[in-house]
Image 1: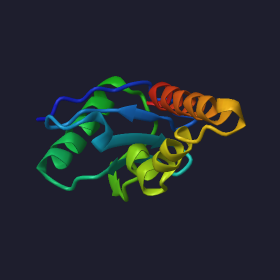
Image 2: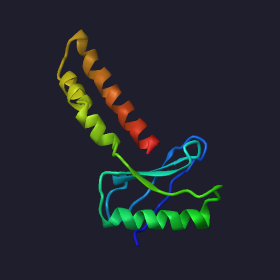
Image 3: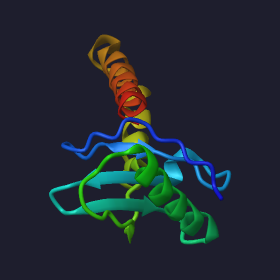
Image 4: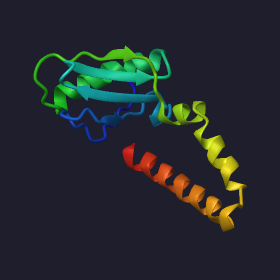
Length: 127
């Protein structure tokens, strides 16, 4: 079975818990706990054996380590990967284009550097 690593799993807010399954990157799978909806959800870019094994392992680990009320079943959902979403929306390209702009006494370049740093820090702290 796949090795599963859980980050913080906030049951009230439904924050993502990172997991690594089948030697893939941690961003390939995200687990969300949403008691309001009534279950855990796995968002995945992959639909393969590693995901199936990872889901089984998550269910097993949750029964052992996380005390949740009721039966929580893992369901596949459509994928929303933060990095791919940013790339699809063209945010990185737009920031890169602005970095070459030197109007306003070079402030645009410094502002885009600050925006990139803030974006990277938010991504690191959120995941």
